[in-house]
Image 1 (cartoon, one colour):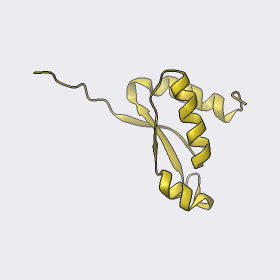
Image 2: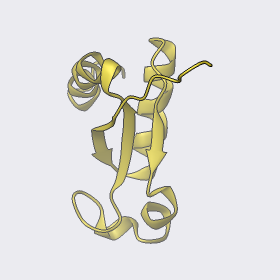
Image 3: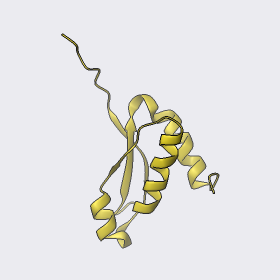
Image 4: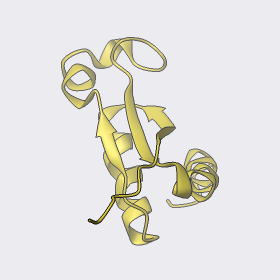
Length: 81
């Protein structure tokens, strides 16, 4: 029987919904699968963002977390503009 390897999910970015969408695209371009968490709340309550209840989070697998955090730092510094 095949056993699926279980990995933990790690939050690597927190911000506005539109920023999270952009960052997930950057991750995908780098071969990292990212998922958005709290997108609905972030869209409905954008004025409560970072780190409030409207904050949208980008989540990756633990194995990709280090590289994703480096990309998040670059993204926040405007490297991808």
